Image (cartoon, rainbow, N blue to C red; front, side):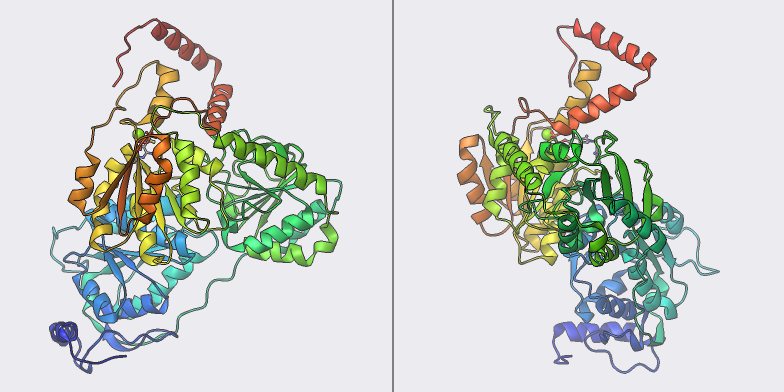
Length: 617
Ligand SMILES: Cc1ncc(C[n+]2csc(CCOP(=O)(O)OP(=O)(O)O)c2C)c(N)n1
Ligand SMILES: [Mg+2]
């Protein structure tokens, strides 16, 4: 480590003096905690131990906002050379941690103060919880020792708020526990079904010194239920049964094994929304997302021929099934790292509590028992249906303003196969799931299950911070933009060249689509008109605008080609293109609606249909 004396080191040394009362035997501290890949060793403060543990875990960035309870930690990050990114609101800190994990396959980290910092961060924590993303939140806390003063600033209860939102809440009670509990948090976040873990670190511990002699523990073993696996193989060994694989987020990092298993089984592979990219879209057995009326037509058709669905690392969530509209396709073998996910929404004939990698690796070793002869007819049919899908998607159907599908397809082409696309909670998200082809995993990101509007803007910034080698684009509706647009200032401050796209229709079109058929009017859906050019200038971004389909090629080239962060307003129109997801969800909803509710709905719709001037807003 370099020990040359500069301003930063001098400030660090002054900081060390501040902690001198707690560090009687410490040698002069220069450039932060020693970073030992084996574990945290030596005498240091709790703040330095936390930084050393995070360095040990190879954290690429800590996202957050400093405050009185964690300034010591932020200072230690600087001394320790641990990269950090200041955000405008803690709601972005947890989202950026989540996105950095999704973009890299690692664990994302954020640091916030208790009270408002914690509550602001909850939405992003919820997204990581429902979307199974490993993140670690460091919540510095007020002084809770016996005799500590009452009514401290930010003293809302942390652990009780965090517990239902997290896989685990680890409370550090003594400086000695700092590295070991941080390592535990990473192990728990990654293990089984990944998710968010909270570490609560009271601020007095940050300045306490301790002699550490730790070793970072190995990861928890991945689950594998041998007996259930054998039952699954027994079922798959009936070679008359045609198999379809439904791959979720749990398959993202096992793409080659998934493709190999599909070839052995001669199985078409559909993915959930979050599993998009687990198999490259150009693989001859890849059929796109979903396998019901909500997904691609190719997936729907291919799975009509299937007798056994092998569902791996997938939850059959409301979003991925269009409100549980997934069709019954015979027997389901459900493989998941979390036993509580198995058979929850779709009954499983065999449930296998196993990690996707272990499951596919074993299946490949046992290929002899389950292998099907190569079926050229199957891949021909898939190629045909996918070509039909792509042709249909490429037809421009909307000419007033920009057709969202044309925008999505041309953006994909302008970016190239390896760049990262973040899709927000907008009408266009369903077309994006259908039409954006992927060359591999961790290139397409969406808040699938907590569906927090505005997620894509901070998420794209967080991903860009840890993937400087990629172009990162975010696609948000104008409603989403209004939720988190201020975070764009972070991109310009930190020089992160994200390409932000706002699909501007002046409304919550999604809500209008849901409200109009049921209420024959819209309520609370019209948005403020925003001067996006002025906003971009105010935030320090370049500005770009696309008004018509004809502008798309040049407008997208400008967005991608302009250095630094760019805000592009896309004047969008949604009328005139069907949404398969919505149609599937609507028919599932109506099918399940009790008779008396159907009558009530019918009467309201009929009576309001007579109103020539509906009271829309
Ligand atoms: C935080 C949050 N609040 C409310 C919702 C409900 N919601 C889902 S989509 C949507 C409208 C999105 O508007 P916009 O970004 O303009 O996209 P558009 O619907 O116009 O495509 C709303 C209000 C949500 N998902 N998240
Ligand atoms: Mg809108």
